[in-house]
Length: 240
Figure (cartoon, one colour):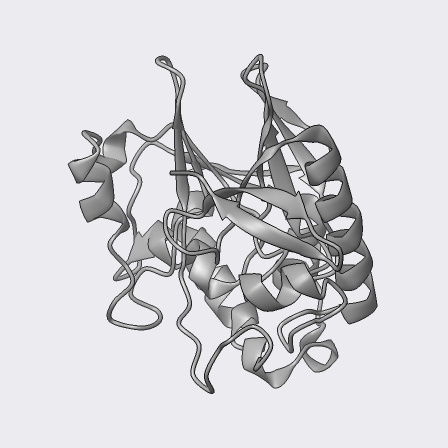
């Protein structure tokens, strides 16, 4: 923390991302909604400022089922996105929604079991809930890529643009200055710390090699940047 010039209290960011290809409007995650800090939960307002209504969203692609990524799907038990189909990685759903793995996670995320079931319930009831497997694609431009470790089914999404790809990496890292310079550092929220470390190291090396743009849920707003290689580890170069 000292080497990264961070204090004892570190500000965090929660980003979700809208993709509009002119025909379809896709969300990657939905933010925390009203489940966490009062400074969060502004998804609908931000969409409106970008010229979109919640009813414009066609699909929501979930990186994983932690509350800060799916809380914005509902408010007061009602679906926020009245038309959208919610897509959840099959392995992620099996862990949080179908199996009893309560004792296998850190106490800080145990509330996710009940929370996830409650949040997806309105979409399940409406028939707007889908499970998918690795390498599923949508609209010919967006493909799912497994990024396991943070959770069992933690998933990223690769958007092909015809130039450099844009990769939505979810919670691959939480504290940019620390985990890019020292990719081996894990956090208590990681279900499988060793796997999270290996996944992060592989991802960072590949993103740098390819020159991909990266969209990260907890990088400083707006969460878009590039990975730059240093003598030790990497640094984050924000997209202006």
